[in-house]
Amino acid sequence: MADTEVSSVVSDFIGFLNASPTAFHAVDDAKTRLQKVGYEQVVEREDWKLEAGKRYFLTRNHSTIVAFAIGKKWSSIKSLLKMVWLKRRQTNQDIMHSCYSCKHVIPNQV
Image 1 (spheres, rainbow, N blue to C red):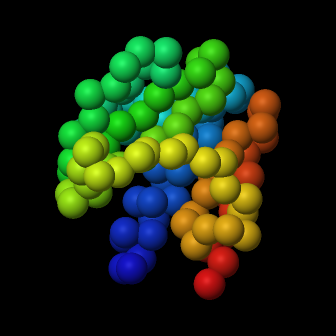
Image 2 (image 1 turned 45 degrees about the horizontal axis):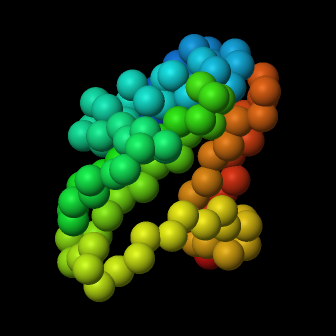
Image 3 (image 1 turned 30 degrees about the horizontal axis):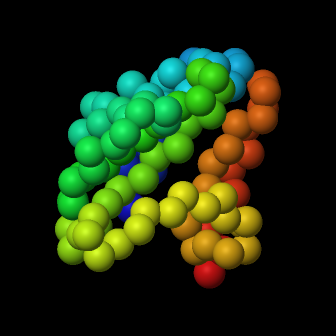
């Protein structure tokens, strides 16, 4: 990454931190960011009409947000979507979670 790209990412992250003094603010900001890049909101307690190749998110109590993407080869007939809370060591994905008024960035464990 070029220095200007790093600076932009860092500035964006600091803006996120400053705009998110609570979990409620963090979820609201994350929701806006996800919608800007094409994620669609689904309601947890309603039937979902998921489509292959699309990205979705849901919120709970305005303090939790879960985002996920459906693979382009996904088929609702052949597949069963399971949402599983993975422990940090069970995934190679970068994870961020918000605890009340402090943020924790967990680096990618390769």
